[in-house]
Amino acid sequence: LALESSLRTALERNEFVLHYQPKVDICNRQLEGVEALIRWNSPQFGLVPPLKFIPLLEETGLIVEVGSWVWRRASRDYADWLAQGVFAPRIAVNMSVVQLRRHDFVSTIAALQKSTEESVEIDIEITESTAMDEVADSIEKLHELYALGINIAIDDFGTGYSSLAYLAKLPAHVLKIDRSFISTMLEDPDKMSLVSTMISLAHSMHMKVVAEGVETQDQANMLRLLRCDQMQGYLVAKPMPFEQMTAYIRNRE
Ligand code: G
Ligand code: G
Ligand code: NA
Ligand code: MN
Image (cartoon, rainbow, N blue to C red; front, side, top):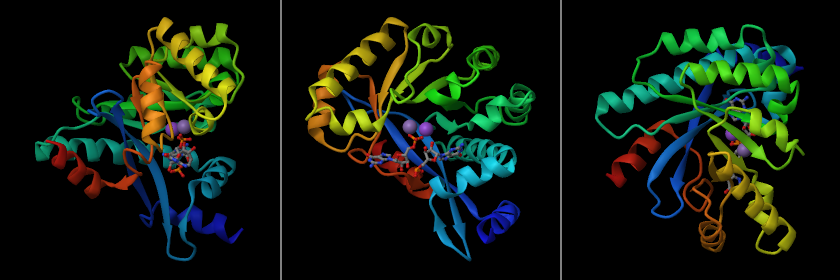
C-alpha cells in the first residue's frame, strides 16, 4: 500500500527514467533500433524493478498516464539524437494490455504522434498474450496504428499459444522470440526446432525476427544459421541510461 501511494506521485516527482537496450543485425551487428524500458528510482524504496511496479500501475490505471509519459520521453530522446547529429535508432516502447483495451487508445497515440516532430520514429511492442486477449479488438487497433505509420512488434512470442491463423491477421512488422526459447535452445532440441519454425513462419508472413535475451556467442551463431534477423540481449548490451546509449551510438560511428 505504501508502494502504491508513492507510485501515485512518482510521475510528478520525476522518478521514472527510461533505459535503452540495443537491437542489432545478427550478421553484421549494425544497430537497428533500441527498446525503451522504464525504471523507477524511488527515494523511499530505491530502484524498484518493473515486474513489481508495472502490475501496480495497471491495477490503478496509472499505466495510461505513465505510458504517455514513456512515449513523450522517448520522442524527446530521439529528437535529442537528431539535434546532436548522431544516428538516431528507432525507439520501440512497450504497451500494456490496459492501454490497448481502452477505446481511446488509437486516438491517444495519434495525438502523441502529432505533438512530436515529424521525423521522430517510435515503434510499439505488444506481447503475444496482450494481442491475443480480445483478438478482434487488437486486429482492428493494430490496423489503425499501421495506418498511422507505426511499426508493431509482437513481443515475448512463443509463450502465449496463439492460433497461427490469428497471427497472420495481425499487421505486425516484427516477431520477437521470447527469451525462454533462446536460453534453452542449445540444450533442448524441441526448443531449437520451435525457434526454427517461428523464424520460418514469421518470414513467410514478411515479418522480421528478433531474438530476445541472447547471452552467448554460441546462441548468436545458431540464430544466424537459422536466419534470424536481429538480436537483443546481454551479449550485445544491457539496458542503459540515455547518456550511455548516446555514447554507445557515438562509439560505433
Ligand atoms: O528491463 P526489464 O526488467 O525492464 O523489464 C521487465 C518487464 O517490464 C518487461 O516485460 C517489459 O516489457 C516491461 N516494461 C518495461 N518498460 C515498460 C513500459 O514502459 N511499459 C510497459 N507496459 N511495460 C514495460
Ligand atoms: O519482456 P520484455 O522483453 O519487454 O523485457 C525485456 C526484459 O529482459 C528486461 O527485463 C530486460 O532487462 C531483460 N533482458 C534483456 N536482455 C536480457 C538477457 O540477455 N538476459 C536476461 N536474463 N534478461 C535480459
Ligand atoms: Na518488450
Ligand atoms: Mn520481450
